[in-house]
Image 1: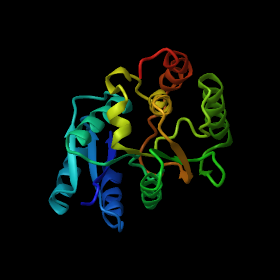
Image 2 (image 1 turned 60 degrees about the vertical axis):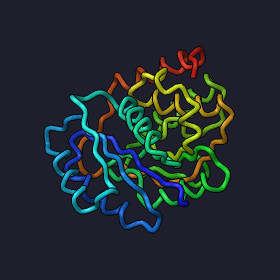
Image 3 (image 1 turned 135 degrees about the vertical axis):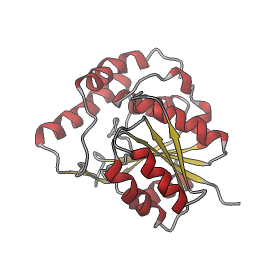
Length: 237
């Protein structure tokens, strides 16, 4: 029996992106389902997803939550949803096309051939960033250097949010202990996987800054990550 794969995509005001993203994923040769988790977007994102569900029955799912609760909590919600339905491979992905849907196949292949977690990496050999100002590239790159030094991990792109997990990884991590909401969540999940002895592999991707919609980056998210890495060293993950 084929092992099922699902892509978790948190949304907030992504009305212009959910349709094209869903169509791009549905067009792939590999059989991916999608779980959108929408935090009560005022622009009608959830309604657009409901229309997509009619076009792609039993392939697209929607969970709605009250108000903006943060990226990390959305993924934890999605992980639990996916595990309860026995998905074998669970993905994280942005809705804004900064992550190329075609790269999903490469991330899946890595986990089918030995990796427990595969990461779409901007900073491993062959990885690239497009349309970011130099200041943001440097901030992101050196943030990963900082994380590697504090946590003693060998991952080049520690804040990457384009990933595939084997379900065993998510079943072993103490998901309820991870309360971070932004980049710190992405760092903590990688750190937890390594602490449990799972094999993490970075796959080079070209990251392209969003064209439609607004970035969710904030000073609070940056501070959470900066100080959060020190907390992770003492957490029961």
